[in-house]
Structures are given as C-alpha cells and as structure tokens.
Length: 140
Image (cartoon, rainbow, N blue to C red; front, side, top):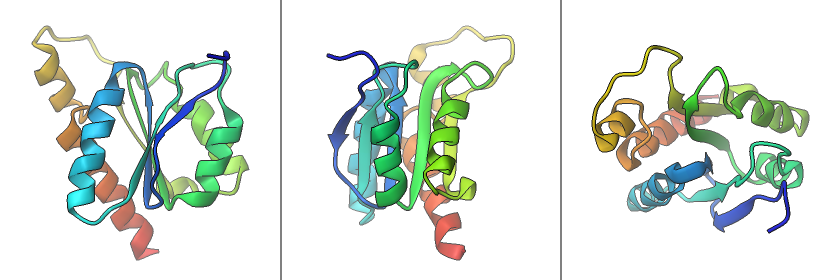
C-alpha cells in the first residue's frame, strides 16, 4: 500500500460513494441497495486523509454524475473540504457533491449501529443520501 493511494473497490457511473475508515462496509451495502433501484454506484476507499489520491478523485469527477463523501469523523475536521476542492478543480459542479458525517456537537453515548443510523452513515442512510444527490443532479 502506497501512502496517499486510494482504492476503487467497486465500479459504477451514477454516483460515487467515497469512504474513509470503517464506513466502507456501509458504503458497500448501500451500493447493493442502490443497485436494486437501478443505480450504478462506485465505491472508493480513500484509505488516507492526507495525502489524498487526487488522480482517483479527478477520475470520479469525470465519470460519475455525483459524489457522496462518507466519513465517521466530525464534519468540521474531516476530509470533505479537501475532496470537494479536488473535485471542483477537476470540473465537477459543487451541487453534485454531498456528504454524510457526524455533526460537530457534544457526542451522545449509544450503540454504534444507532449512531451510524442517526447520522446517515449506515447502508440505508448512505443509499438515501445518494438518491437525493442524484435527484438534484437530474433536475438540473
């Protein structure tokens, strides 16, 4: 594994779910859910927050209608901003880029599955966020 190299885990052209960390499992499950709706989702495992795999992200900007960034970190300290910068620089409209993450608030204690669900980081939440992002892309 080379530092700064992400992995394209599954191919697709409608929406890319870019994950960082253990949320990859949810992204792969969301891909299956979306496939049932006829949506082709690719799944990317960033593997590193820094340096980003700008080549892989640039490729997504040219091949997918929308990109959803999913990370189990707070939105204010995550990689979303860096990913958006690369995607927009590569020509993707910012309206087609979304994110699912943990809000920057005092954390509550609960079971991991419930916390993932409440922040749209489970498979159903990611699939729903991807559908909403694609619906916005299709209206434009």
